[in-house]
Structures are given as structure tokens and as C-alpha cells.
Image 1 (cartoon, rainbow, N blue to C red):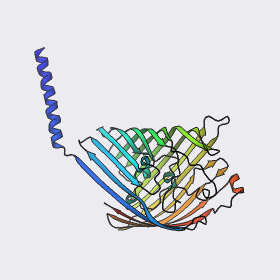
Image 2: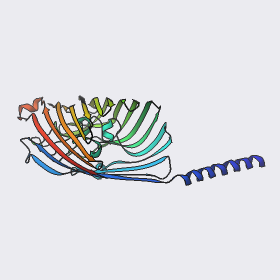
Image 3: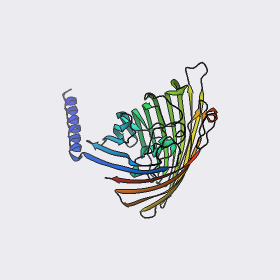
Image 4: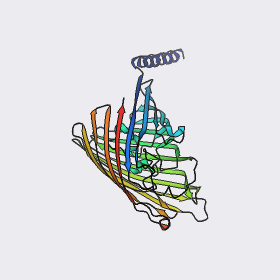
Length: 371
């Protein structure tokens, strides 16, 4: 018995010494970064009080801290002048612990990892001023989920990643963006001046996401994605009613010697659950873009489509064709010029009452200073 106690004591002492030594060898890491993004916009929309706008579009601050090797704490704040509440200001705030590269666990608020663009929507990381509408509308997939997450990766030349997240998400989409309040609402920007929509309280509902990705030597990657709105709400007769919602998507990315091609395709469905006759609405969206880096210049083109308004007498499939260039003279400074041709194909009973401007030109210039 004494021998067993002695062996146990020695083993425990060894574990403590190794842990202490490892902790002494690890130096806590702190990383701080941020940016400000000023945008000039012009849109020839007849209903706008002013067609030219200039101002601070957004400003972001990111902080991460690793007190020990396998633990990371991270928080990201992104301010815009359209932010409705503090919950929207904090786009990320979480802690993750890596048991190994194959298995990590986390808790907090996470950017929804379904679309790669959604995880790096920050202005310094994108060559275009605008984002694909499947991301900026936050309708087919929410911007963030607050709850729990497990993730991991394995493989070398052929790498596989997975991510499972479940918690609360914000149900309302079509968030205002930009200076002229056109971005994020391209398909309803003509509707809002005519229809007095009710001010709806932000809804925090249960939902989850799953993403699986395969990549080959950073040359090609393919992602499969699913979002389940276990709880959701739909607007019926200017009221929020209970509903359920799901969407799925696939994304592909190709990187060849400065040439990058990205694309995503998404479909979704929402159905009310408590009405005498439940209503079903279907949605879809996709985009494809190509860019080429030549020194400090990165020209790009993008074709964008969204149909996330489909029901209650209104359909508004919307396309946006974009052409632009990003100029980065130094790492901390980025200039972007973008032209968009936006077309909205309004249909449904509402077109009998209002004469909508179904296409418009959208010019944008952005200056991003980061640190």
C-alpha cells in the first residue's frame, strides 16, 4: 500500500513539474488590431433625399489573448452608424480551448462560419467596398451565433475542417449598411419609402450551423454548409409570427498565382408554424467573383444575385454586377473603387400600387486605414 502511495505521489509530482515547466516556457500572447473605413457613395435612386453621401462607414477593433498555449480569448467590436444595440456592436466574443488540432471547444459569440466571407467581412480583408448580398443581408445565414462551438482540422496536403455551432441568433435580416443606407437593402430600398413597416424588436432565437470544408494545398477548397433555425419568426400582416427556417449552401475557391475565383450558392425555406393555414416562403442566392493581384493593384469583377423576399404579395429577385479595383500602396492603407449596376425585378400585387425604380447605378470609394 505504501509503495502504491509512493508511486502515485511521484507521478503526481511529475505531472505538476511538467505542467509548471510548460507554463513557464509559454509566454502569454496579446494581439490588438483595428481599422477605420470612410466611404463616399453615389446612387441615382429617385427617392433618396441626397444621392451623394460621405462618412464613416465602419470602424473595427479586435483583441485576442492567449494566457496559455491551448487557450484563446477573442473579442471583435465593429461600429457603424446604423448599429441598433450593444449586441450588434459585439460581433465576436468567445474563448476556445484546443485539446488538439483535431478537436477544439469554445463558448461565446461567434461569427457564423458558413460563408467564408462572413468570417472576414472586415474592410481591410476585402477588396470590394460591398459584400455579396447573401452575406450583407444576413437572411440566409445570420451574422453571429451565441452559444457553443466545436471545431477541428486534420490532414496535410489535403486538409479537412469541420465546425458545429449552436445557440442564439438574431432573426431579422436586411441590416442597413453604407452611408446612403442602400447596402444590405438593395431589394427593398425602393419599398421602404412607400410602406410604413413596423419597428420590430430584435428577436434572439435558437439555431445552429454545420460546416465541412476540404482543401488542397491552399489551391482549391470546397465547403458544405447548413443552417437550422430551430426557432424563427416571419412577418405576416406586419406582425411577427412563429416559424421554422433552414438554409444550405456550397462554396468553392480557386487560387492560382495571383488569380482568385470565389463562388457560393445558397437555398433556404421558412414556414410559419402557428397559423390556421401556414405559409411557406423559399429563398436563394449566389455570387461569383474573380480578382487578380498585380503588385499594389487588385482589379475584380463580381456577379451577385439574391431572392430573400418571396411572399406576402411581394417578390424581389435582385442582381448586382460589380467592377472595381483595390489599391494597397502599403499594408496599412487600402483604397477601393467600385461600380455596381443593381436591378430589382419587382413582382407581386404590390406593383399595382407603386411605380418602382427597378435599376440604378451605385458608385463607391473607400479609404481604409488599419493597424
